[in-house]
Amino acid sequence: MKPKHLAFVTTLALAAPATAQEFAADVPDNVRTPDVVETETLGTLNFFDGMPSAETSQKAFDNLDLIRATTAFLDGMSIASLRAMFQGYESVGAGPNDVVITENLMDARSIWLTPNTTTIYIGSYVDISDGPVVLDVPAGLLGLIDDAAFEYVTDIGALGPDKGKGGKYVLIHNDDDTPVPEGHFELRTKTYEHWFLVRTSPDADGGTEAPVAAVKAGLNIYPLSEADTPPAETFVNISGVQHNTVHANNADFFEEIHTALENNPVGAFSPEIVGTFASIGIKKGQPFAPDARMKGILDEAAKIANATARAITYAARDPGVFFYEDRQWNSPFQRQSYLFLEDGARILDDRTYFFYMATGITPAMTAPPVGSGSVYAMTARDIEGAYLDGSKTYALTLPGPVPAANFWSFMLYSGQTRSILETDQRSGGIDSKRDGIVANEDGGYTIYFGPKAPTGKEANWAQTMPGQSFNVMMRLYGPLEPWFDKTWRPGDLKLLE
Image (cartoon, rainbow, N blue to C red; front, side, top):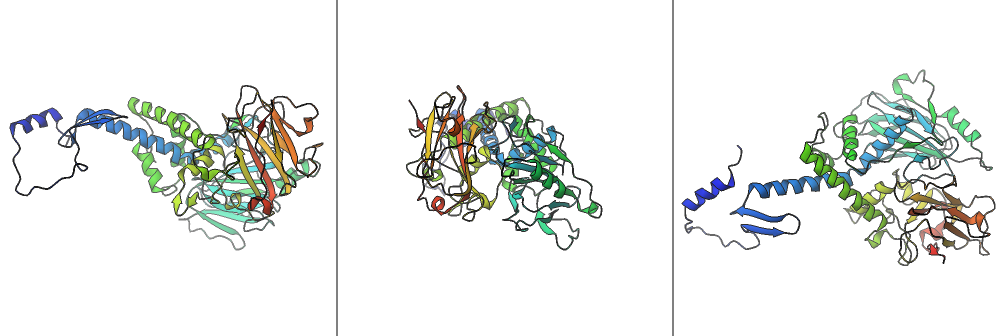
């Protein structure tokens, strides 16, 4: 029954004076709600003996919807991020189970979260809504499969079940009773949509033709029902193709969430986050049609959550994300947990930081075996703690020897898109494979970042753009023990006057 108006209740109360109770409790002040409560956020709140007025109730509900919508953005970012990746694939003509490939490497025309320009990416939006799907993977690839919640399913390659030799993986839903053929790697999952992402390296001379041909000759993704006569794989070259795979930072974000719910089964996502979505009107099987009040709240929530995610990512207040007490280098994986756990607690800011900045979850990203895989460290600030400014020139020194069995790289990313910084350099950064790069006497390197190369330092320079912020991600491929025990420390970026 709809509650009576407070004024009516108050009138009745005035007509009936309070009487002393025989069974009176000694109610502490910290249990009682005064008739008038002053708050910083919602202003004055009015009650009749604990009963909120109509105006107070509306304030409370508006605030609750704002909290829930902000939480939906921050905690649902992983879901929206992967949905945006799939929408990016679709925008270039790649449907479910097709394969996108950077045949000529990546450049800044493609908007991805923190890609590199040194390896060949191979990806697919794998959909098992119509039944199990086979991923026939050739030898020599390295990567992962994540589900629609952006949760880890398996590694592919040297750290996966195939041990780098290649093999046939079968993605199958938990409730599917289809027999999986012997000799296949069976992967049971709770979602329909999945992200398959692997990479391979160019030839020693930088050529990509042979590695790409090997991928095309060996990789095939198809329904298990067609395993007897697999169809030919469709490959879509996305090198140099303008497209976006990054989730929205405005209220369009919530549309991405609704699409993810619609495309996946009940149980694909945690009940907690699905409950948060439902509380603001995003429900599987129902239209997402917020009214004018709710549209305003969703718009406000997206603004607040986006600002919060950027603060967590670029202005971290938690010392736990920093690798060293005296350096700016940091990472959401500094705690060595791909599940973002510490002492049994989910570190929510680490999770937000990661999914706002990057993609692809695997245990190999947090603590790969010594000499294999790769490690990452990021900074958006110089040695003095100021944001990096593309109009200025900085120098950074890596002491020698650099603990990377394979190679090291620096990628520069836009503070806006978190994708490759748009400059006149296709590489978007610099790595130890660059022709002519000059080492220091100790085997280390000094690298320069700025709009123009310092005289004589062109081979050791990465371009920035005046008027634009940027951040730097350092990658060590095949990290060695001095990285893990922190006896080796990279220098910070120092502003050159």
